[in-house]
Image (tube, rainbow, N blue to C red; front, side, top):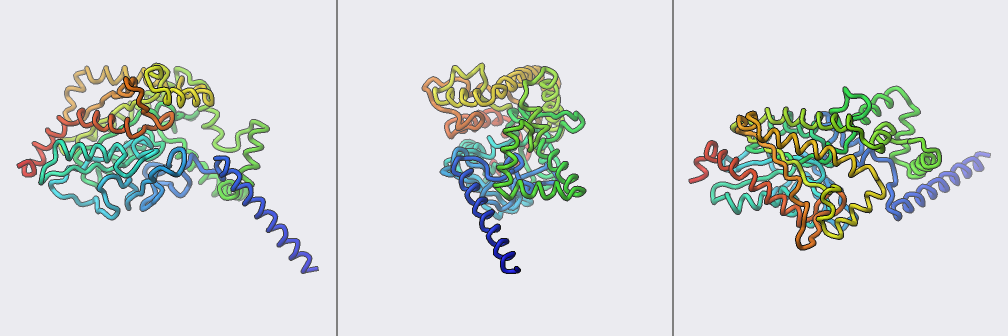
Length: 407
């Protein structure tokens, strides 16, 4: 009897394991996720300051786009991406007096997607340009890539205020953002809207797991068993009942109202206003409203970029149409701010709208690797644009704080 039970148990384990392996490899072969991962972030990347952040000392900091043939960044002990000439074990709490240290913040467009090598990110390109144009035998520029996939402005604000300014001696902080604030849902609960939906989901999961054993088991199985994950996705497809991130997905799949656009605009500029107040004579701050594909500029781009646009538009008919009103209103507010007396009084802060720099290509060059991320050609254009926008500010900073390094 015991032998029969043991044989039945062992047979069941073998069958279930075989099913799990077959499903996992099949999902992977067809390019589908094999288990549930919260927005491609994962619970192990929870961070008490920003909700989530890059894992330190990781060889998989950035997600490679369209396959594994692209360069995969690594991170240092702080979770910053290692670009250009930066090395892994550098102590950023210390700084040589003739190093001009810049932090570049943003989302995956800053972190890097579809990269050729470690010199391809915007940060590494900007560092090279600065050292070629302004650096000398004494003075060197260091641009640290603090980009993190899916970040919005509130997370960048927290990262600057509680980590970078506090401990890492920055001389200049650059923020390159806009598109995630344009598309990221504010959610139904307005008092939580100045947070990332991943942060809200982490909190919900913590609360549910601490009081509900069944939720804990369901969550564990979804994130570790492909067969269980596939079963839930099939239920989702056949019943139209969302099994994962239901609130955010329902909210973001609908056409965005004017009221929702205004809420996202309010969130974005509320955070920008707070960021501007962190600028001072020792640490200048510049924010760049980033270029993106939009219906208004698609006719000026290459055939390949138009194809990328049209393919996504078929899959998600609201993505570009929801982003457009945000971009229009943000451009108006930036233009109004830059012509105001308030802007003239802000010596150490600037906000620049560079959202149109990739709108037209006269020689049919491709600028995008997908509907949101850039390629090496556009990253070089962006790096040069940022350089020319900050050149005067950097020279002001050097005269004030780096006199001995300029001789």
